[in-house]
Length: 445
Image 1 (tube, rainbow, N blue to C red):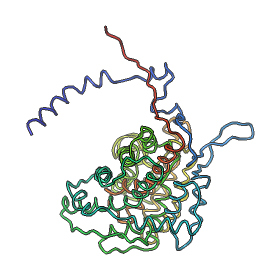
Image 2: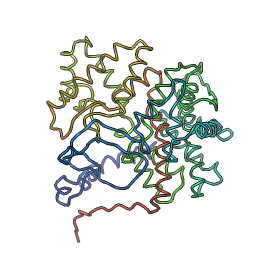
Image 3: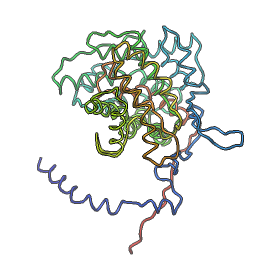
Image 4: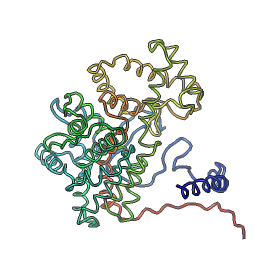
C-alpha cells in the first residue's frame, strides 16, 4: 500500500506538467489544416477508408446539386435496416440473419440461415471449467473489462490463434458472436454473487434459441421471458450491430487488424474502445438523466415544468451540470436517427406490456421539447433529434437488465459488425493503417 501511495503522490505532482506540455490549441489545428478528432467544423468525419459493409445517409443533393439534410438512413450490405426489420416474421428473430448478411455480404436463403443458426447454436460453449477458472475469478463490476479478459484468455485455448487464413478468421469470429452473450451474462452473475452477495446461477444456452432469447434466458433466475421481450431485444441488437464503419470501435478493429494481429486481440481492442463513456455508455447517461428528471419534476404531464427543468439542464445548473440533454443529437444524423425511428414503435409496445405508459409519455414530451430548447440555446450547424440511445436504456430497464450489462449488450450486437470489418480489412485492404501526425514540438537545443 505504501508503494501505491508513493506512486499516486508522484502522479499528482506531475499532472500539471502534462497539462502544460501536452495541451495543443485550436489555433494550431487551424493553422495546419488538421481536424481535431478526425472531424471537421461541422462534425463530419474525415474519410479514412472504403467499405461495402454499411452506409449512413444524413444528407442528399437537391435539384440544384446542393447538399441538404434529410431523414437519416442506415444500410447494411445494400439493404435499408428499416426494411430488414420489417421483413422479420411474427415468429422469427432477425439478428442472426443480419449477422450473416454483414459477414458474408448476402442475405441467406432459408436453408443457409438455418445452417448458420445451427452452427452458432452449437458453438455456444466455453472451454471446460472456463466459467469457473476465468470468469468467476476476480469478478468485476465492469463487465466490459471482464469480457475483454475472457476474450484474450480464449486465445490460449485456440490452437490456431495466429492462423491468419480467411477460413480461420471466419471460425474465430463466429465463435465470438456465439460466446459473447455467455461472457457478458456469466460475468455479471459472478460479480453479482461475489460483490453483491446475491445468489449464483449459471444457465446454459439452448442451441435452438436466438441470441436475444438466450440472453434473457441466461440472465433471469427462472429462465422465463415473453415473446415481445425477446423480439424487442432482437430488434435492439440489429440496430446496434453496425453503424457505417466510422465509429471509434470499428475503426479500432480495422487499425489493429491491419497490423496483422489475431482475432482475439483485435476484438479485445474494440471492446476497450466501446467501453469508453463517449462511445458505448450513452444510454446509461440517459437513464441517469431520466431518473433525475423524475425526481425533480413534480408533474410529468406539465410541459412547462418539464421545459423549465430541461432549460436548467442545458444551462448546466442541474443533473451533472455538463449542459447536455443526453440522447439528443448525433455526430452524423441531422433530421432524424433511423434507428430511433424504427425502435420507437417497439418501445411503445413494450411500455404497454410493462405498464410504463406514463414513463413513455415523459420520454415523448422530452423528445418534443429538447430539440426546440437546444436550437434556442446553442449555435448548431445541423438539426437535433433523438438518437437510438434515448430509448435503448429505457428498453433495457423495462426488461430488468441491470445497468452493468447495458454496454456489454452493445458489444453483443456490435461483434457482428466488428467481425465483418475485420474480414473486409483482411481481404480488401491488406495494408497496415499508418496515420500521420504533424509535429508542433518546439526545438530547445
